[in-house]
Structure formats: structure tokens, C-alpha cells
Image (cartoon, rainbow, N blue to C red; front, side, top):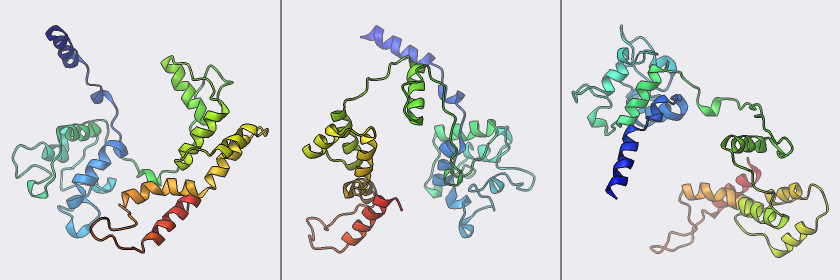
Length: 258
């Protein structure tokens, strides 16, 4: 086993660090760091803001701080932000020890590379209007039935992988019913779909499932779990609660996507 282990260690050691070559994206890589570890002192809360510096806006992050700048696009060495997050003296290092936050080496590297790559700022994804991307070219132009199929097939062709054969109708109704409701189809639903002669029988079945209360319950489940919802208090004081009204409201809103 030792020779094999040696080869593995050597391969890992000599493997190129692909992360350093990847373009750092502000929304994906940098904004979460600023939000989690910088906003307490340099965020939107004016009362708690330190040094009149803020990282929640581009203007605030790149402003003139009396002859020096927290962020100098393209030059990490001249960026006060990099100097402070890499400072050896605890009194100079950011975030400060008393804050309870600490940047990892990976996070420091991301910030440095982001600045080196030009410190491109991006709007929060919620305020970026969605744009329809052009469909990728595919060799088998007859296979895609919708835009998503084009992207899937383009990747499969790029990887040299053949697409799976089309599923039969029984598998289709089972898959879509489980996806949308979390429950398997009933025998009656399967028979109705198998005997349907309409060319858009599948689309009609999807519409039926989307209109089902089971779909609303399926979609609401994630939000209710995140809020730690429960119908009762559990084994300690298993008394009746009135929160079911809120539960039903979440289900209703999920059902109608309001």
C-alpha cells in the first residue's frame, strides 16, 4: 500500500491549484464574506459603523479614506483591506479579535484574488433582471423538446455521454408525481394517464398536480422546516397550539406562488 499512497500524495502535491485560476465572482464568493464577517462594523447600520467605512455598497468600499483606499482594483498590495486582514499584529488585524470573527486563509485568498482581478462589483442577485440566455448549439437537434433540454444535451455532448432513452409513460407519471407532491401516484391516476390519448396528456397531468393541495404542502414543507414549525410542543407540554393557521397560510401561498 505504501507505493500507492506515495503516488497519491505526489499527485495531490503536484496537482495545479485550479481555484487560483478561477475568476472570483463578487456575489458568489465575496459578498457572503463581507456580509458574515464585516457588516457588523462596516455595514448598513450607521450607528455601529466604524471608521466611516462600509462594505455593503461599492461607493463606500472604494471611497477615499484620506489618501488611502480599502480597495484598489487590480492592486491588492495597495489595498488597505488586504493589509489589515493579513496583518500579523492582533491590534491591526481585521476582523478584530473582540468581534469573534476570523477570516480563513481561503477567504483571504478570495478577497486578494478578487481585488487583483479588478474588484468587479455586482448588484445583489435579487435586483438583477433575469435574462434569457441563448440556447447552446447541439448536434442532435431533434432530441430537445424545450430550452432546458438544449442545455442538458449540450453538456452531455461535451462530456461524450449519450442521453438516456425516453422513459415510458408509467415511469413518467411516477417521477413527476413524486417530484411535485412527494407522494406516488394512485393506481387510478396511473391508469388515467396510461389511457389518455391526448398528445398533451403529460402537460395536462402536470397542471393537475400543480393545482393539487398536495403540491402546496410539498412546497411549503421546506419553509415550515426552516422555521421549525410543529403542530405541538412535543413531549414536554404536548398541548394544542393555534399555529396551524400560519401553517395553512404558508401552504396556500406556496400553492398559488404569491
